[in-house]
Length: 146
Image (cartoon, rainbow, N blue to C red; front, top):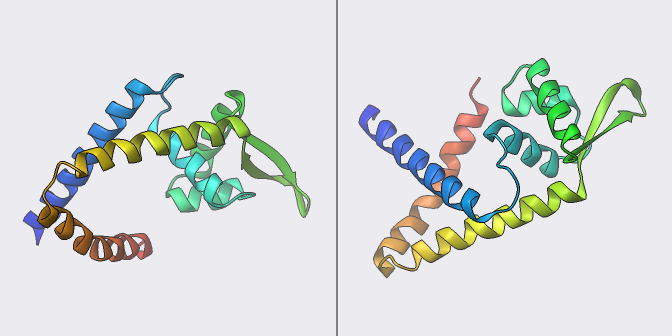
């Protein structure tokens, strides 16, 4: 199982790396670090999430997420609003600029991978489709582990 795990991780990392590099070339604006992108995704998926909850979701320390929040707010990509239930806590929302940037990034990466998939045989595509539910289960198991 160790060899399979190593090969799987290498393949997934390679896929993510090449897609990230190719997409960055074609998109305007300076590229964001991975941690900032991950935080934007979490906030987009959970509008109004607090810093502590985002930190738990990302498996990061609260102060690390606070730093990322400050950077993204300064860049105009994230808004902080006081939580009405606890004025000391902040609720996070992505800005329209962040939503536009994320949509452009999603279109670019999906298009890039779709074009590459089109070059595979029908058999290869079928194998990838069959593997996806198991890979999704694997992600779920890993998320549940401490």
